[in-house]
Image (cartoon, rainbow, N blue to C red; front, side):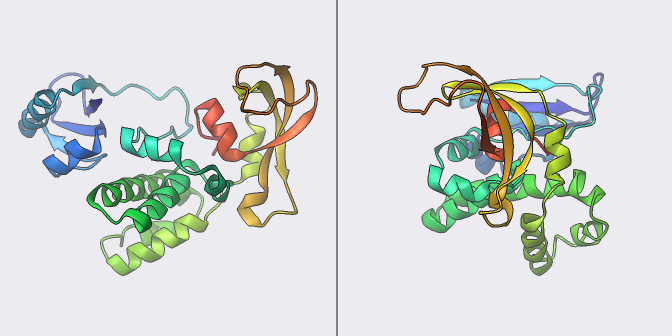
Length: 248
């Protein structure tokens, strides 16, 4: 377990952004992921983390290697929730971007648990969804900036989140950028070919990635093995998890 802080400059930083931190630490300090902490208050966060046995990492700004929006550095608890989310329900998240998936999983989890931890995870997922909207969706939807500046209003906030959950990227364009990329999943290595839409499934559920099997292995007895050199379709979330980077 660790916390990661991003300084606003290499020399004499004035603020630090919380990039990664355990949920329980955030609850105890009244901060949330993405918050900026003034330099005169950062010692409190660091000392509290160290006393709890957490490692503290401080990173500095650097030039972006590319213009693709990175996967968010979510908390360990939200990561665990996404990993352990029931496989039959994961299909509901197909055709969603990472932040939409995390929000849906957190919302379902909170509806079941209704406790402090579930509400903290839902709040974190909501933060990342809105952050993605500000950084990515707003550049593609002309009406979103007007909605996003009114998020302090609870009614507008609820409507905005509903809108964000319906939004879809240009999956055909996004997936085409990864054509030729190879990744391992289960007992196979796959190569991305193109976007594929399964017409038998509704809306987002039908958005798939057409892949070619380039290698067979026997790593996991509980997983199926696809025949070598055959084509198959995988869910967007499956490919994204295997590549460990967002498709859109």
